[in-house]
Length: 149
Image 1 (cartoon, rainbow, N blue to C red):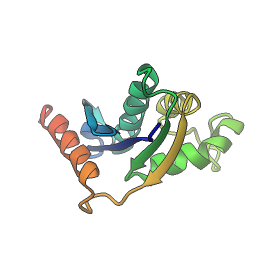
Image 2 (cartoon, helix red, strand yellow; image 1 turned 90 degrees about the horizontal axis):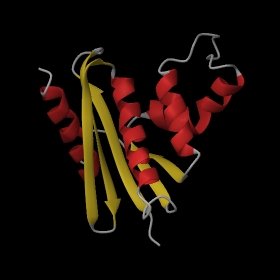
Image 3 (cartoon, rainbow, N blue to C red; image 1 turned 45 degrees about the vertical axis):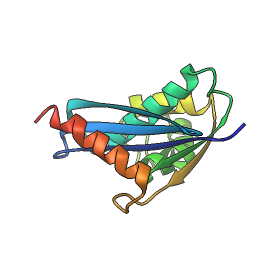
Image 4 (cartoon, rainbow, N blue to C red; image 1 turned 30 degrees about the horizontal axis):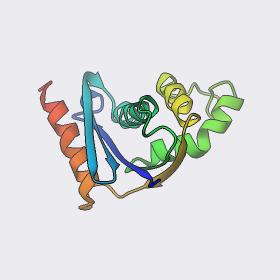
């Protein structure tokens, strides 16, 4: 069976400020777009929310959940956090190397739970560089942010 491909993006107007997230799930020729937002949030929370909502949709879809998933994010924070940093955060009781509480711990726990249920390969993509599905995610983010302006 072919890979499931996901693009995610999140952002906000001001940081903190009104935020939005968007994701595109590509299953062969079928495309699913999801988006949402919050009135007062941060860019990093929206980046994490995009990934969480995309992976939650995969877990809940019986046709998707057992497939290899490629997740493309323009957020090094999300990619590095879930593939590398989180191991030490958990080992250190959700403290950073500087012994400070990990920001957005609630979202990291949710993302980690979903990540551990799936076969995921995380990839970084340059934002605002003309990558078609990343640009669509960015448009979804802006559409959600505009709801709070």
